[in-house]
Amino acid sequence: MKTFVVWFIRFVINLIARVDVSGYENLPAKGGFVIATNHLGFLDAPLAFYALDDWNLFIPIAEKWKTHPFLHWMGERLELIFIDRFNPDLKSMREMIRRMEEGQTLVIAPEGTRARDEKMAQGKPGVAYLAAKMGWTIVPVALSGTEDRVVIQNLKRLKRSSIKLVAGKPFTLPPFPKENRDEILQEYADVIMCHIAALLPEHYRGYYAEHPTLKELLKEKS
Image 1 (cartoon, rainbow, N blue to C red):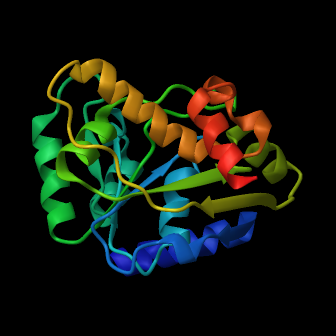
Image 2 (cartoon, rainbow, N blue to C red; image 1 turned 180 degrees about the vertical axis):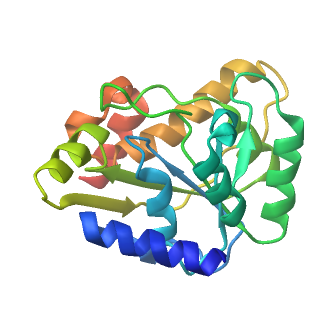
């Protein structure tokens, strides 16, 4: 059933969009790594299965969608993890760790929700906590062209949207901090977001547009 659902996702996305994917050479050969992305619209999660059908993926999504019949059905077929975004969710975290240890690949948007203003918001420290604690490799992936407003307007005009996915070079975070954890984990989350921002056109960078870490990364690229 999962194979059919992924095929259906690819069919629908090809119908409504032209997708340009680059950076496959930056992905580790085996699973057990984290793909961290920005979050612009409802197509972002399905695009993971569109672009990365050779990896055993799983995606955490907000628990509120569990009450939506179709999304609940899709979530079960795609083995998504429904998480509580507002409270510590130890059960979901343990499940993520278990799956990563089995070699699955975690796809997550540190922002936690779609960017309503179509620009990056500050990332939350959840994935930074796990990545630093477990030593996971992180691959930044930048999405552009998936804004709900743009996709819906194009659908109304019977026009295909132009979407880009760019994968950057993998990196790891420093070891899990022993002191000032909240502050340092937020710094780690900002580092992850800056790696994503460095792959995006300037107008998407939002909260991170003037961040010192982003400026350092852009200088390294130039």
